[in-house]
Image (tube, rainbow, N blue to C red; front, side, top):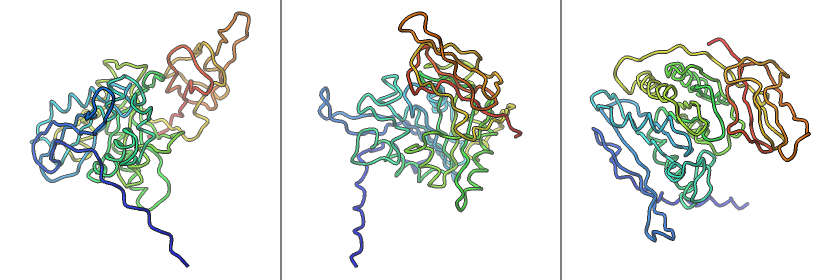
Length: 344
């Protein structure tokens, strides 16, 4: 019997870092990914990075701009890069305010270079597209260093969320219960107005899934959206980030706790989709309580007058935590998300 051939080893990453991950102090630099293109034959994609190391302790990897049209995380992390003193740090903090730098510069969810959605490109490939190469570097170089990961998200240009911090219910495997419990401890410490036990409807290729499969404690957020950042949501991100770092044992200081309300997204009944294109009218606002079967939005066909609208109904009772923006929808768009309130 012939043994199946082992797959060839992965090639080295083409990404290089201008920072020394083992050095103490504060370093501001870039990750450099060669990208030959029409307007720059030997050009590169440059991704800003900051490393702050104070001494022995855990490592926290903090990421913003995974999607390029989400802004609370980048603002909070650019501020943190300026403010942190290595004397306050009891381990190491790696900051990537705009991980998907091409998408961030374009103000788009996906990369203008290859159309790639970075948060669906993990674990990536060193010989793949630009987006896959970024994911590969995170997977093979940054994640092995990390004990805790915070990946900031908001709704981007097409969704608006109640501001929440979240972690996932993990599959039943050795060590998962402790990993999951620690993640929810850090969600509570973050102190967003809402805290969510989160279901992903499209988890394949996500940063979350890759990090969790590697045993990392992974926390994420959805902080507003609609293609902008409000003063309120930026402050939630800034305060929550520090609270999480203190609770994770990476940063000295006293946390600034805030009350939070716990929500659960247990299954696909939380999501409301449109099967038709049209003009959307919401019948309830963010934060409203809804009942199973209650109309939450109405879609008007806009090709001509005299056509009756279609109501879209909640699949479960709970609180409206997300709504579609802007005012037109296409078939298949998620138009609303409902989460159930639970005890902490």
